[in-house]
Image (cartoon, rainbow, N blue to C red; front, side, top):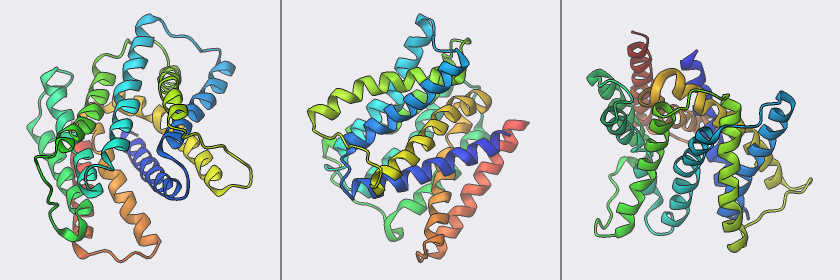
Length: 287
C-alpha cells in the first residue's frame, strides 16, 4: 500500500512539474501560479470538509499546520522563484534534490526515526540515480562557489527536509489528514496572496484559456498530493518518504520517452538504480 501511494505521489509531482514548466513559459507568472497552487486546493478541501463537518483544529493543530505551510510550501517555493534567476537551473535542480540527505540527518538527529545504515545506503543510491538523470548531458555542473545564492539555495532542500521530519515527529495525534492539509493550504494562501498582489502576478482563470485548464488540473493534483504527503509520511516515516523524488524523476523520464525524446543509455541505468533503491527501501521498511 505504501509503495503504491509513493508511486502515485511521485507521478503527481512529475506531472505538476511539467504543467508548471509549460504555464510559466506561456504567460503565467510564478506568484500567480503559486497562488492557485495553494488557494485552489484549499477551496476544494474546504468544500469537502464542510460536507464532512470537520473544519476545526485545536491551537496545537493550527500551529502544526502553519509550520508545515511555511517549511513545506511558502519558504522553499519563494526561494526557488528568487534563486532561479541567480544560479543555473541545472544546479538549482541538483541542490533541490539534496533533500533526502538532509532528511536523513534531521530524522536521526531529532530521533524521529532510528538510525539505519542500510536505509541510508538505499537513499544515497536513489540520490545517485537522480543525479545521473538531472546532470546535463552527463557532465558535471560548474559554478562559482563564491556566489552567496548557492548557499542560500541549500536552504531549499533543508526546508523540504525539515517539513517532512516535522510532519512525522511532531504530529499532534488528533485531527484528520484532510483537515491538516486544508489548514496548511489556508495559511499558505494567506501568506502568498499579498505577495502575488504586490508583484502583480495574479493570473485570471477563464473558460477558453489553455493555461487556465492546466492550472485547474494542477489544483486537482496538488489537492491529492498534499493529502498523500501526510498519509505517506505517517505510514512509512520521513526517511523512506524521500524516495518520492526518485519516483518523480523516473516519471519524468517516462514522460520524455512518451513524447519521443531521445535519452542516453546512462539514463536507463539511472532508472534501474532508482527502482532498485525504492524496492530496497520498501523491503527494509517492511522488515
